[in-house]
Length: 224
Image (cartoon, rainbow, N blue to C red; front, side):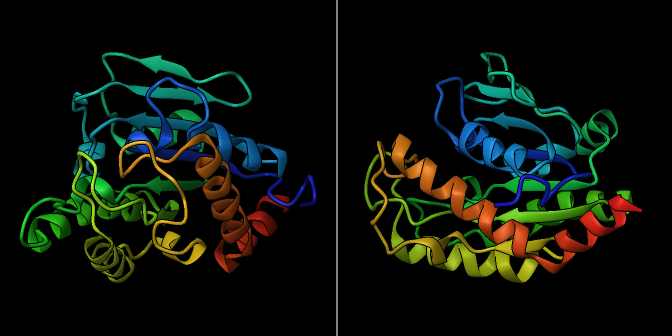
């Protein structure tokens, strides 16, 4: 990629434990490094177990989190809490928000997908972003592997991804299921990838993001 392909963009990434909980190698490393190499300013805030509606206020996470600003190493947050996304946007002067969430609203292990509740969660966050007039991209879940302690299944994650694609507007949707075949990327627990998997996922997200016309327009606007 050209080093300046995202020059002028300040990107805020928020999400769940897929961004990391302190150990290196999650998306707060792999995705953030790729976006920085493209010329963007990037900050990541990950709170383990967080759901979309948590990011309109301050809610304690259940299992830690990570904060990473720029090229500095990510800092593990044992007592991680979400912060209202509008405050994070103001603090980082972000002109693009990337949301990495899906698994935490999939209802894995339950007979039925909690569609109404999931819609409430998603729209709570997208309404805030729309009111803030901030461009956004929502990254959906990857396939993971079936089984494990989270009871993730390919059929449910496919349903979840289709739901997100139809309901995250005005955010653009990146469908992570298109990046690999079911079960192709190894996991450590069914839901979280190995370090190699996060390298693939981070690279694929970055390549999809830079191709979005909305992102290209933001870059052009930032130049003027």
